[in-house]
Length: 232
Image 1: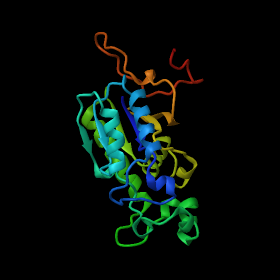
Image 2: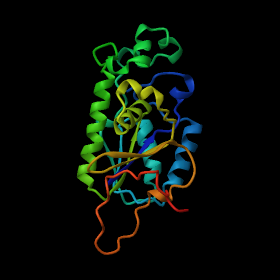
Image 3: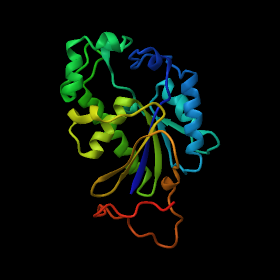
Image 4: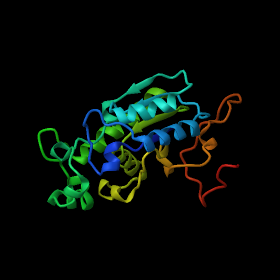
């Protein structure tokens, strides 16, 4: 089974100012965001990563670089993990956008939401490209890999909705804060959502156990009753 750690970038100047940054170039982490990514880099330092793949946008590259500190793995970028293309909404304030008729569609029926303008895309397309990227990297890295994908709030929420078997119209029920990690393990039968919006605490459970002889193939079955969890 392949495990992906979905990391949202740290807080940015646009986040702090209530602006929808989208694909605006040059959006950087603010002071709080820089502290957040240093902390998450330290949290994940003991987790061996087969790859670190990032959205090409600066705020994600900055975040992923903090996780790479001290590792031999090189950063890869994938446009499919990039932010939703908000089109003409890009650069406008959330307060202003909340008055737009499309806002209610985004909130209540996001699978039908298509952002205006020649560069706008539908949220359904955002989900499709991001899920395709995750599954392609899973296949490339193999069933024993733990890898990290650094992306954006709506993109990660869309991937989690797919993993949870939720219709995209339910993805607004998921919260993904800056510099949080969410973890999904993919098996032959189904994904298992291990963590959502985790902003602190122990991550030792993400470290694969040492190989002892021939490893038994991981089961795709869910544990009836919930199981014993990971021993501390």
